Length: 293
Image 1: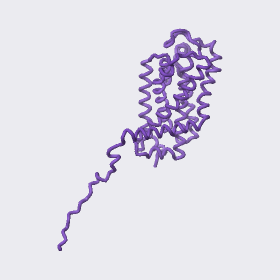
Image 2: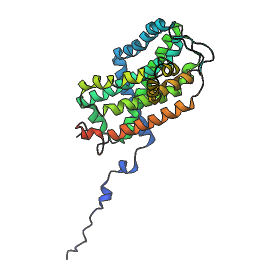
Image 3: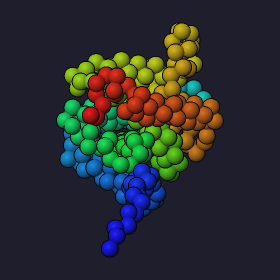
Image 4: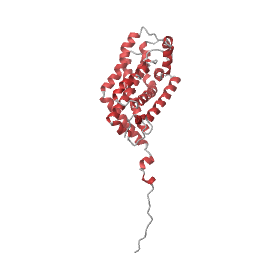
């Protein structure tokens, strides 16, 4: 029998692609990934009890000692959202809440620097899920931890006698989520700039303390304006000031539109910056030699 030469059929290269990436991930798969990242962050928080204690010690020292010492010195006049004169510890409480979220955002960035040095970050970033989703999931997990810390602090403050509305935590919850995302995104962006763990403390000192003290967390801005217009101008440029005011108004069931707009805008900028910084093609990680290989 004569052999019949059949034409050679070459497979189309587009047919060789994997079906899953071509179709994309389902909503359930995204939720499983989100749950895994949040569970990992929760386990880390539970096993690092000193992190929880230190998160409460800092604001409680300010509340118990600093506020008691300055109660008679720093008088707070009737300013929004307050409808009457308030004690200094009542005024300083929203700033201390924002302080907890600020330090938690920096602690989260510290853990990312540590994971990068230990190689754990590489395992996360080579996941088939989009990198932006992994970073946002990490951001949501960090924000959830900070809200739990805030809840514990508000309970202690209430036991100490700080007069807050009964449902203040629930009314402030949306503001806490947004402010936690902003400060967590800032920490994530900074973690892309820090190559070694030893450099973390120095960089944080130039971020945490200027942001905290150059804001309305400890004193009203009208007092700052009377003493130094230059410092007042710096405080107005500080996004942490608007985070404090957003939390302050939300504790009393009110909304500061300007603070909401500023915090939302800065959150978007910091988040996009962090995603781009961790992008292997054009991010800062590759330029600094810290990206995954």
